[in-house]
View 1: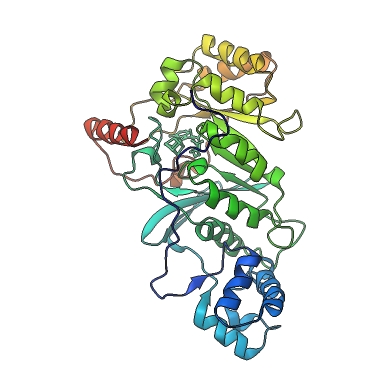
View 2 (view 1 turned 135 degrees about the horizontal axis):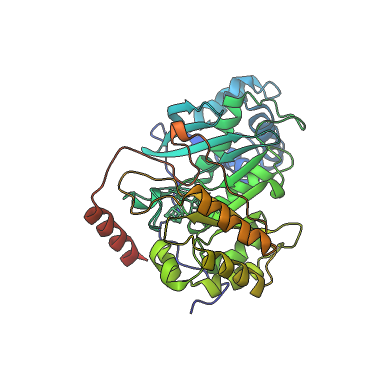
Length: 393
Ligand code: SAH
Ligand code: SF4
């Protein structure tokens, strides 16, 4: 049984990817780190560096400036010297799509690898679905990302870079306190954010910084498949809303569809949720439940879901996600009637259980089912990859 609070080994090393041009990207670095780099590069002494780093920070995060020549309150020689050492980078856009319902999807590239990001506009909010890794070391059986072979952690620069790029393309510079299109962030793109804890934490700290992008922690949600030993730290050191990919109420089914369950079972997971700092009735934990036909969608399972969440006295809401099929997937989507009935039972049990409306279907933009491709892997190959990944953790 894992000990709550113990640090789980992070399976992918934390590396910063040097740019081929040798320049250092300032996006994703704290003000202190920027100040230190200025001193290291001989561009300022310690006292000046602090002030310069604040000016540069403000150009980057309040004005969206990517070119040092535009930083007009810095001297011309300093601007030129900065350009010799640093960049204010963005991930490269490989493809950009806009759905008929306004959902946007980008295929991005940096350090040679590709990852995706989605923006979902609603009447009262605009949510950016951000990736934390290229691929995922876990292999939930209904998730396309889990079948990807290659996995690496995204750096803070690449995570913050997604938000910056979305703001660029929404035309949201300079920052306005009111009327923004991008109002919410969900860490529900590719990857398991709690297996890239430090980079996700450092990135979200920058996104939440009151002197920059200034997104409130109440408008950011981190979704985990249940990396129990990291949940307490996530609450203490990041403090954003928590979403947990539960997807099943019995050991048998959850072991099959979320194999991490063999390491951290449902009981340990719900206990960690009950202990999650900051969870209360005003800030409930979201339990994600992907609806898979004849697998996890019965009346009995809906009743059991209510019992489980009540047993742990959790401030909970449930998000029912109709399964988004992909070529080669072993599951089918539950019928709309089944999903509705499941939702009704959970609602009657006193827990809110809205059905998530599929968005951006025409551009394959489902959050959590990113990096969709026409690649159709054989069942044998999918099983082989799953076994290989499981053996690794
Ligand atoms: N790794 C994290 C966050 C990324 S996945 C996690 O698992 O929570 C974000 C959400 O999308 C998860 O709830 C995931 O289970 C769900 N998801 C993945 N593939 C899906 C699919 N094909 N259809 C519907 N939901 C899916
Ligand atoms: Fe990884 Fe989340 Fe997909 Fe599971 S659902 S394979 S944890 S991205």
